[in-house]
Length: 168
Image (cartoon, rainbow, N blue to C red):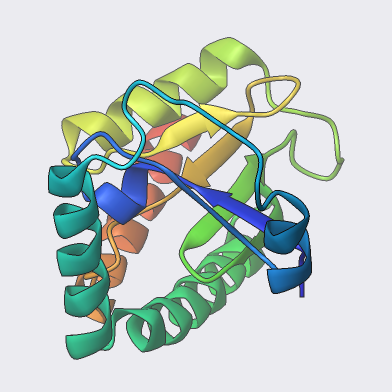
């Protein structure tokens, strides 16, 4: 369990806000000190943040993240067994990634080829991020409400993009 957790983006579901959560001991160490932040304590942001947390709880979105995230990884691993272009598959919950590599190696696929696959996926309706030292890591960070059917669609698109690349 971490002593301090910072969060932003997702906690506001698009509304600009951030938060810090810490232990009672660390919070007590700051008691009596003065801290000022121009936008700190904004009541609208606090209301939005609470509403987002309520929806996450009511719709059991954390459970969905675990279940659908596990399913996504399973599907990526199955695809990895068929297509040696897919290297390491990793992640937790819905923060996932996989590497595109030169088949039979762990060497990163060159940027132009990664771009080709990435753009093809985009053209077929799946938007994912890119990252990694060699820009060969496809980063998947879908919304918490993603379904297994959405994952199936994304996997089909990824497989088609790989097939299109291999058939060039």
